[in-house]
Amino acid sequence: MAWFFTENPLKEKFHIITGENARHIEKSLRMKTGEQITLVDNTCMQYECEIETVSQENVSVKILRRFPCQNEPDVRITLYQALPKGEKMDFIIQKAVELGVTEIIPTISARCISRPDPKSLQKKIQRWNKIALQSAQQSRRGIIPKVKDAMTFSQAAETLDESNCNIIFYECGGKRIGDILSQNSNHKDIHIFIGSEGGFEDREVNQVIDRNGTPATLGKRILRCETAPLCAISIIMYLTGNA
Image (cartoon, rainbow, N blue to C red; front, side, top):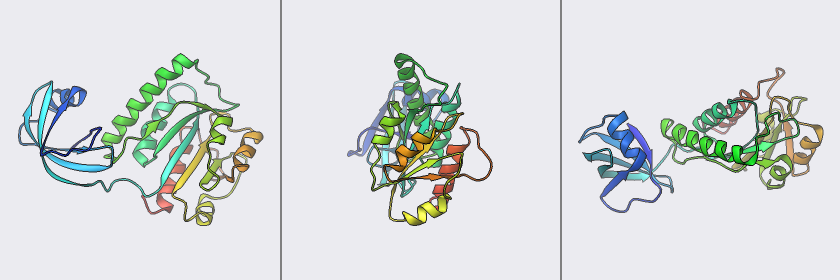
């Protein structure tokens, strides 16, 4: 069933879909009167709907059922991803959203080769948020994960709440994810740092440790920067019962 997001809760029995979503339903999906689609609002409420009328400008639907969306994990993962080269960030965002990440913060660490100017970076963030939206629709998420404004590594470390589960994945080793999570079993907010191609400097690891963070390992093999976040998120989702 086609899956779309709407900004506000739907209180009435009927709803009008406009803009890009209407054009996608009419032109790309070629949906007809009587077919069903799903809408999800910004409170994670899900609406099963039946199409009443279709045009490129407006799609009118009748709401058949409404109930809380059950597709979201019960942990909230914030991914601090050090900027990689090229288009790797597009791939990371797409797959991280599919796997259940809640928020992504592009991070400029000491060893980042990619250092776009502010104007270019803002354009990238707009594109990344569009990728996140498309991925959230495809994977039937209950929310649209947000790609936030980029931060320096120091700024990112300062945002950490010491009461949460803060993890930095470090190529020089650390604890296993299972051991960290077992020591933080009551924490539902998990913040993870993944490096770019060059990894992290020792001082950056220490900044996270100073915020009650823990260095972690993904095993004996060194993973590529676009593989590591997907591996880490998958393991966390499995170990927390969200796989």
